Length: 204
Picture 1 (cartoon, rainbow, N blue to C red):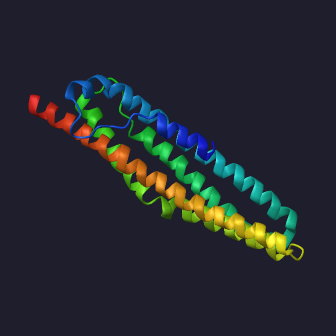
Picture 2 (picture 1 turned 180 degrees about the vertical axis):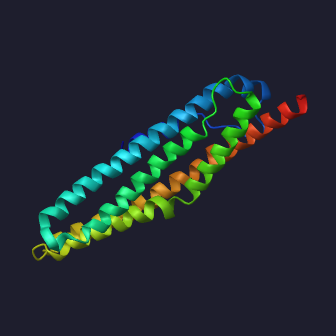
Picture 3 (picture 1 turned 45 degrees about the horizontal axis):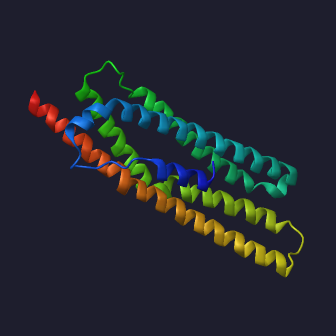
Protein backbone atom coordinates (compact mmCIF):
# COMPACT_ATOMS: atom_id res chain seq x y z
CA UNK A 1 0.00 0.00 0.00
CA UNK A 2 1.54 3.34 -1.02
CA UNK A 3 1.09 6.86 0.29
CA UNK A 4 -1.65 7.73 -2.20
CA UNK A 5 -3.63 4.71 -0.99
CA UNK A 6 -3.31 5.87 2.61
CA UNK A 7 -4.38 9.37 1.64
CA UNK A 8 -7.46 7.99 -0.15
CA UNK A 9 -8.46 5.95 2.91
CA UNK A 10 -7.94 9.00 5.12
CA UNK A 11 -10.22 11.17 3.01
CA UNK A 12 -13.00 8.54 2.93
CA UNK A 13 -13.13 8.15 6.71
CA UNK A 14 -15.90 9.85 8.63
CA UNK A 15 -14.29 11.90 11.36
CA UNK A 16 -15.70 11.56 14.88
CA UNK A 17 -17.55 14.56 16.27
CA UNK A 18 -16.22 14.39 19.82
CA UNK A 19 -18.04 15.51 22.95
CA UNK A 20 -20.82 17.14 20.90
CA UNK A 21 -21.85 13.82 19.32
CA UNK A 22 -25.47 12.70 19.60
CA UNK A 23 -25.88 9.96 22.19
CA UNK A 24 -28.49 8.04 20.24
CA UNK A 25 -26.24 7.93 17.18
CA UNK A 26 -23.28 6.88 19.31
CA UNK A 27 -25.27 3.92 20.62
CA UNK A 28 -26.53 2.94 17.16
CA UNK A 29 -23.08 3.02 15.57
CA UNK A 30 -21.02 1.71 18.48
CA UNK A 31 -20.86 -1.94 17.40
CA UNK A 32 -20.07 -1.21 13.76
CA UNK A 33 -17.33 1.26 14.67
CA UNK A 34 -15.96 -1.17 17.23
CA UNK A 35 -15.68 -3.90 14.58
CA UNK A 36 -14.15 -1.45 12.11
CA UNK A 37 -11.49 -0.42 14.61
CA UNK A 38 -10.57 -4.05 15.27
CA UNK A 39 -10.42 -4.84 11.54
CA UNK A 40 -8.29 -1.77 10.82
CA UNK A 41 -5.77 -2.64 13.52
CA UNK A 42 -5.65 -6.27 12.39
CA UNK A 43 -4.94 -5.23 8.80
CA UNK A 44 -2.29 -2.76 9.93
CA UNK A 45 -0.48 -5.29 12.09
CA UNK A 46 -0.51 -8.04 9.46
CA UNK A 47 0.55 -5.69 6.65
CA UNK A 48 3.35 -4.01 8.59
CA UNK A 49 4.76 -7.22 10.06
CA UNK A 50 4.75 -8.89 6.63
CA UNK A 51 6.33 -5.87 4.93
CA UNK A 52 9.06 -5.68 7.55
CA UNK A 53 9.94 -9.35 7.10
CA UNK A 54 9.90 -9.04 3.30
CA UNK A 55 12.31 -6.10 3.32
CA UNK A 56 14.50 -7.90 5.89
CA UNK A 57 14.76 -10.87 3.53
CA UNK A 58 15.78 -8.60 0.63
CA UNK A 59 18.37 -6.80 2.77
CA UNK A 60 19.65 -10.09 4.19
CA UNK A 61 20.03 -11.62 0.73
CA UNK A 62 22.06 -8.64 -0.44
CA UNK A 63 24.26 -8.79 2.65
CA UNK A 64 24.80 -12.52 2.10
CA UNK A 65 25.86 -11.88 -1.49
CA UNK A 66 28.45 -9.37 -0.28
CA UNK A 67 30.07 -11.91 2.00
CA UNK A 68 31.98 -10.75 5.11
CA UNK A 69 31.93 -7.15 3.84
CA UNK A 70 28.15 -7.10 4.19
CA UNK A 71 28.07 -7.90 7.92
CA UNK A 72 26.69 -4.44 8.95
CA UNK A 73 23.54 -5.24 6.99
CA UNK A 74 22.78 -7.83 9.68
CA UNK A 75 22.05 -4.88 11.98
CA UNK A 76 19.56 -3.54 9.43
CA UNK A 77 17.92 -6.96 9.22
CA UNK A 78 17.69 -7.16 13.02
CA UNK A 79 16.04 -3.74 13.19
CA UNK A 80 13.46 -4.65 10.56
CA UNK A 81 12.72 -8.01 12.17
CA UNK A 82 12.32 -6.17 15.47
CA UNK A 83 9.66 -3.93 13.96
CA UNK A 84 7.83 -6.98 12.57
CA UNK A 85 7.99 -8.65 15.99
CA UNK A 86 6.51 -5.51 17.51
CA UNK A 87 3.44 -5.78 15.28
CA UNK A 88 3.15 -9.52 15.97
CA UNK A 89 3.15 -8.69 19.69
CA UNK A 90 0.40 -6.16 19.02
CA UNK A 91 -1.71 -8.95 17.51
CA UNK A 92 -1.05 -11.22 20.49
CA UNK A 93 -1.93 -8.39 22.88
CA UNK A 94 -5.15 -7.66 20.95
CA UNK A 95 -6.22 -11.31 21.08
CA UNK A 96 -5.44 -11.56 24.79
CA UNK A 97 -7.58 -8.57 25.76
CA UNK A 98 -10.33 -9.17 23.19
CA UNK A 99 -13.86 -8.64 24.51
CA UNK A 100 -16.54 -10.66 22.74
CA UNK A 101 -19.73 -9.24 21.28
CA UNK A 102 -21.79 -10.86 24.02
CA UNK A 103 -20.11 -8.78 26.74
CA UNK A 104 -22.05 -5.92 28.38
CA UNK A 105 -21.81 -2.63 26.55
CA UNK A 106 -20.01 -0.96 29.44
CA UNK A 107 -17.30 -3.62 29.37
CA UNK A 108 -16.87 -3.17 25.62
CA UNK A 109 -16.71 0.60 26.07
CA UNK A 110 -13.95 0.29 28.65
CA UNK A 111 -12.03 -2.03 26.33
CA UNK A 112 -12.33 0.34 23.37
CA UNK A 113 -11.27 3.33 25.46
CA UNK A 114 -8.21 1.43 26.71
CA UNK A 115 -7.36 0.36 23.15
CA UNK A 116 -7.64 3.87 21.76
CA UNK A 117 -5.49 5.23 24.58
CA UNK A 118 -2.88 2.61 23.71
CA UNK A 119 -3.04 3.49 20.01
CA UNK A 120 -2.76 7.18 20.86
CA UNK A 121 0.51 6.54 22.71
CA UNK A 122 1.85 4.49 19.81
CA UNK A 123 1.07 7.11 17.18
CA UNK A 124 2.43 10.00 19.22
CA UNK A 125 5.72 8.12 19.71
CA UNK A 126 5.93 6.63 16.23
CA UNK A 127 9.38 8.20 15.84
CA UNK A 128 10.87 6.00 18.56
CA UNK A 129 9.51 2.54 17.81
CA UNK A 130 8.95 2.69 14.03
CA UNK A 131 10.45 5.59 12.07
CA UNK A 132 13.86 5.74 13.78
CA UNK A 133 14.55 1.96 13.43
CA UNK A 134 13.42 2.05 9.79
CA UNK A 135 15.66 5.01 9.04
CA UNK A 136 18.61 3.45 10.86
CA UNK A 137 18.16 0.19 8.92
CA UNK A 138 18.07 2.09 5.64
CA UNK A 139 21.13 4.22 6.45
CA UNK A 140 23.21 1.19 7.49
CA UNK A 141 22.17 -0.73 4.38
CA UNK A 142 22.91 2.18 2.02
CA UNK A 143 26.22 3.01 3.73
CA UNK A 144 27.39 -0.60 3.51
CA UNK A 145 26.56 -0.78 -0.18
CA UNK A 146 28.21 2.61 -0.79
CA UNK A 147 31.48 1.57 0.85
CA UNK A 148 31.88 -1.30 -1.59
CA UNK A 149 30.45 0.28 -4.73
CA UNK A 150 32.46 1.72 -7.63
CA UNK A 151 33.38 5.38 -7.43
CA UNK A 152 30.23 7.47 -7.84
CA UNK A 153 29.85 10.00 -10.63
CA UNK A 154 28.49 13.53 -10.06
CA UNK A 155 25.19 12.29 -11.48
CA UNK A 156 25.14 9.49 -8.91
CA UNK A 157 25.80 11.97 -6.10
CA UNK A 158 22.91 14.11 -7.31
CA UNK A 159 20.60 11.10 -7.38
CA UNK A 160 21.68 10.08 -3.88
CA UNK A 161 21.04 13.57 -2.53
CA UNK A 162 17.55 13.55 -4.04
CA UNK A 163 16.90 10.09 -2.64
CA UNK A 164 17.83 11.06 0.92
CA UNK A 165 15.79 14.24 0.69
CA UNK A 166 12.83 12.05 -0.24
CA UNK A 167 13.55 9.75 2.71
CA UNK A 168 13.58 12.72 5.10
CA UNK A 169 10.30 13.97 3.58
CA UNK A 170 8.75 10.52 3.95
CA UNK A 171 9.82 10.40 7.60
CA UNK A 172 8.23 13.79 8.25
CA UNK A 173 5.08 12.94 6.27
CA UNK A 174 4.42 9.66 8.08
CA UNK A 175 4.97 11.36 11.42
CA UNK A 176 2.56 14.13 10.43
CA UNK A 177 -0.12 11.62 9.33
CA UNK A 178 0.12 9.74 12.61
CA UNK A 179 -0.13 12.89 14.72
CA UNK A 180 -3.04 14.10 12.61
CA UNK A 181 -4.81 10.79 13.14
CA UNK A 182 -4.47 11.31 16.89
CA UNK A 183 -5.82 14.85 16.71
CA UNK A 184 -8.70 14.30 14.29
CA UNK A 185 -9.67 10.68 14.90
CA UNK A 186 -8.50 9.14 18.13
CA UNK A 187 -8.96 12.02 20.56
CA UNK A 188 -12.48 12.95 19.33
CA UNK A 189 -13.47 9.27 19.36
CA UNK A 190 -12.22 8.97 22.93
CA UNK A 191 -14.43 11.92 23.86
CA UNK A 192 -17.41 10.18 22.24
CA UNK A 193 -16.80 6.93 24.08
CA UNK A 194 -16.31 8.68 27.40
CA UNK A 195 -19.56 10.56 26.88
CA UNK A 196 -21.35 7.29 26.11
CA UNK A 197 -19.79 5.62 29.16
CA UNK A 198 -20.88 8.50 31.40
CA UNK A 199 -24.43 8.18 30.07
CA UNK A 200 -24.51 4.44 30.78
CA UNK A 201 -23.11 4.92 34.29
CA UNK A 202 -25.72 7.60 34.99
CA UNK A 203 -28.52 5.36 33.71
CA UNK A 204 -27.35 2.56 36.00
